[in-house]
Image 1: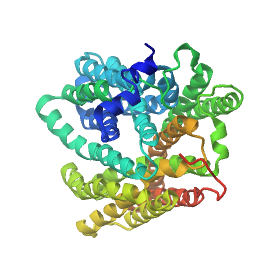
Image 2: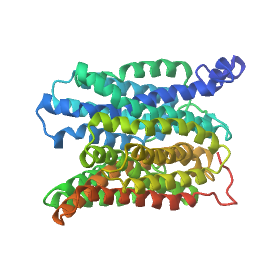
Image 3: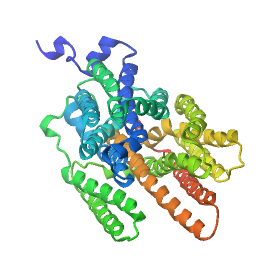
Amino acid sequence: MTRAQDGPAPGSLAALAAQHGERYRWRVLMTVMIGSIAAVMSSTIVNVAVPDLMRHFAIGQERAQWVAAGFMAAMTLSMLPTPWLLARYGYRHTYVGAVSLLMAGGVAGGLAQHYPLVLAMRVAEGLAAGVLQVIPSIIILRAFDEGERGRAMGIFGFGVVLAPAVGPSFGGVLVEHFGWRSIFFFVVPFALCALWLARRYLPVSAPGGGAPGGRSETLDAPGLALATVAVLGLLNGLVHLHDASLFSAAALLGTGAVALALFVWHESRTPKPLLNLRLFRSRPFAMGGVVAFIYGMGLFGSTYLVPVFMQSALHFPPSQAGAALMPAGLVLALTIPVAGRLADRVPPHALVAAGLALLALSFALMATVNPATRLWVLMLWAVVGRIGLGFVLPSLTLGAMPGLDATAVPQAAGAISFLRQLGGAAGVSLVGIFLEWRLRLRAAAGSAELSAYADTFWLVAALSALATLAALRMRAPQCATGAP
């Protein structure tokens, strides 16, 4: 008998949907959500272990910070080849491979006796995390009808945002009682759960429902190499702007800029590009890419800035600073599902613009904070920003997709995630550089340290306002058709 007579192939989307019924797509969402939570937890929880790592390996801050920077750079780069991995190996094998690499990196990092191995395992975890961050958006855009995508994005965002909110708290307890190695092992139970669910619910098919492409799918290796040089050159160049001599920074930034130009040239000419530049001919997608990059700069930059501001300028102890930001994190987790439901009824570009406007307002209000400001006021300003963030997260990818062909969804989702993460990596460096410059300038002028932080908050507010203008241009042209 032929397969058509026997029924759908085992492990195919049709077979799994028939086996698990109407709620199957929500089980798929839960599966990829747990893997993403594990990836997000591994990216944030290690920060609380940095002082322990420095003492254990007798290293300085300049080497210890690479456990975070190396993870972020690897995560950014691995987002680009994710659509190729899905087309080549299918959903299940790609996802299982990424989760397995994440778990292996955690176990080997926790057992490592030398710092270079710890750093190598953080890079391995970052590579896995980048793949795991892209897959959920592709799954949601493929598995859910247009009227359900916002809700699905909201549910997914709730879990992914809640993870970094509680991760550092768990991490602090683990480090205090069991040492820095326990941080690496923390990811293992999440990974084991994700692997079990993946083998049960994820289809073996590639995006679009067909069989994985096998050897017919070729990776754009030159493009990936150029992207690697560009990202590492630009990010390292920004870090070296702190140096007394700017030679290293100029050399790295110049190398990154040249590699970026070559990457754009190569991608515009190769038949199977890593990043399809034709996507940017769609105005909603082009503006969504701009929003994603600038939004990433403001979001990740402020995530670094706010805790440092509360401890260094306002002299809060770490525990009190964390407690002061906890209500904002809880409000964010509650806002995202609501915003997800709104995204099914309100044009996504309007929600993105409104969210970014609230984010800009929050940073501007933070610039007015001083030691006389009451704690509840500071908490309120943080809540305003997190409400804005909650409106942006479920709507950004949806707002960038109208007008694109359905076959372009995997690369489009990967590109938005890549630009957001790249903007975040650049934003952390930019905020640090700008803050150090303003601290030095204000000190020379005899001004208060608080003024330097206010200047930096105004910078982040300006970035968010700039992204708001781009978000307003995400509206799809009236003639656009074929929205996924």
